[in-house]
Amino acid sequence: MAGDVGSIPELDQKKYDADEQVKIICLGDSAVGKSKLMERFLMDEYRPQQLSTYALTLYKYTATVGNKTVAVDFWDTAGQERFQSMHPSYYHKAHACIMVFDVQRKITYKNLANWYKELREYRPEIPCCVVANKIDADLKVTQRSFNFGKKQGLPFYFVSAADGTNVVKMFREMIKRAVDYKQNPSDFMDEVMQELENFDLEKKEDNSEADEDGLKAESPELV
Amino acid sequence: MGDKPVWEQIGASFVQHYYQLFDSDRSQLGCIYIGASCLTWEGQPFQGKGAIMEKLTSLPFTKIAHSITAQDHQPTPDSCILSMVVGQLKADDDPIMGFHQSFILKNINDSWVCTNDMFRLAIHNFG
Image 1 (cartoon, one colour):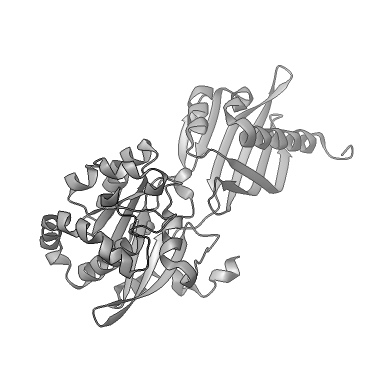
Image 2 (image 1 turned 90 degrees about the vertical axis):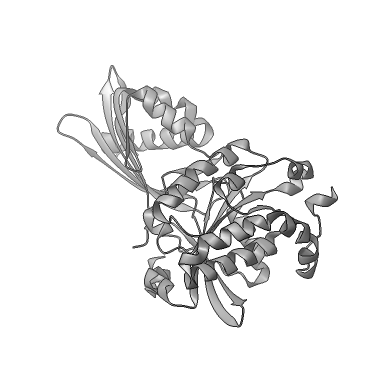
């Protein structure tokens, strides 16, 4: 297996300093659906690099932001969070973070606080969002309020990796935020405040955007 | 089997027993540890049967399966057995990961217990 990663550019985090490269990490308890979300977003295009001797599953994606082509590396864990705490290199040079919990398991929501604390130790400023996954199991959960994100000033998404609700929207916005952060890290906090002000508005637009993306329009508001 | 040194036989049957319990119902592993046992789990130290069992039973997966690739056993000068295991494991739906585990086994009152246990995932991190 070591031979697979012989062409070690994958392992060289210096590449994330280049303009056209961003790194987005996924955090959250095991089995909340981090990998499933990734696979749903990337669909047929996805070529995860399992790097089986490494504590990482790498998903590569090419995005267009504005008129620029950006290579996005999504970092997902290999499952080591069940055994150990995350290694600092996982956070190193990340430009955005997607924090996921499972709406069916309260503990995974409670643990967001721990994940967030650890994230901020390593990456105090990067854009981060909170993602409530598995809403397909019981759409009523979308009427409940999950205040952790709001309290921390983080955008919040109800998603379903199983049926695709909001998945593309969430990923696109996070890619954009990652690129923005990279280009202009200092303006980031202002932007968050703006995002927050528009937060309710944005939620109402979910339907139309999801339709454009060819997703099922199972919006929380319709339930 | 009969030709193998006794420490190999004891070590191998311990290893088989250990992972069988671990994979089926790890709350029963308590019977192999004693009050003085030490566990180092991914660098985190635990001492005593109680602390060890609390750690093992609180690991956040519901299903786990170990597959042993290789194991080595040696007798120690104080009549214990040192065992090293290399293998792969799969927890719930996660990708398969390699692991290493080492044990020291000691005979107390005619039964073998584990006095030392060290576990590591065999995965690298990035610089």
